[in-house]
Image (cartoon, rainbow, N blue to C red; front, side, top):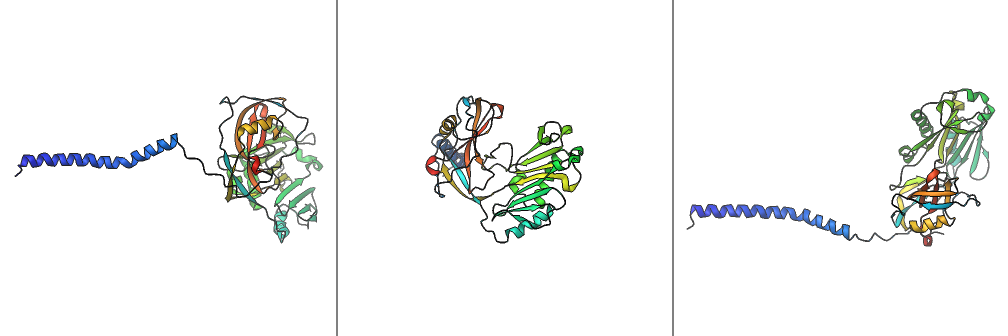
Length: 346
């Protein structure tokens, strides 16, 4: 028969090794996860193959460029070379309203909110123009693409330049947002995106940019979409958005807005497909050969400092939101090259 001393000795050993075993069992799952994470970091699985379910995509339409402008490029990035970028990206489907039924009737309340009470003039099957009856203003609407272009002829009213009620940036941005909100056109990604404020003087009869608020007669608000998949949504002119409002310094509500443009396509967040990309090296070679589109530059010798992926919004009706390579450099240089592999682009 075991003595009490022997029982106590074996009991302590059982407790000791049982505790050790319990700790080991508890450590196995996190240790396995750590080993798996290290293995996947060293040997990452191949990315899923692009789905390309839309077939060949339409070629991106860039504005016409000056054929005589042929800059010479030099690459000087922080990395010392072109960056490593993804080899595939999402392409989103964009809704287009192809029905003309009752669309004009839906737009008339918006026109009345802007001070147009008369029936519009039909320009063509999808374009209508509202003319102001007691002020020099007009509103052009495309009922298919739900785009708006408002203009007030401030040049016919020289006294407007004497009115200097120009609010601060925050108030002006709120005023622009309220305008589109009141018309039922303020989308969430425009609210969440960035905005650019520009001051203009109008003493010459033209809108001339000025950096001084005290010299400004007008202030323009460009509203940009929020980033998509961590990528910027860029426009043909880089710093100008197809959704913008230009305000005067007048306190008269009928003269406060002198210009407003709204060209906005609704992107279906859940309707997308992945497509292979041509690669930033090929895009760089294409740009050097005169391809792509130069959104902003005047220099002949261009030093490119950065290359990245972005989504391109043309400001014109487009069926898909497609990625582009964006090259940025000294002097405000910006250029775009279509990113979709040429085998999947018409």
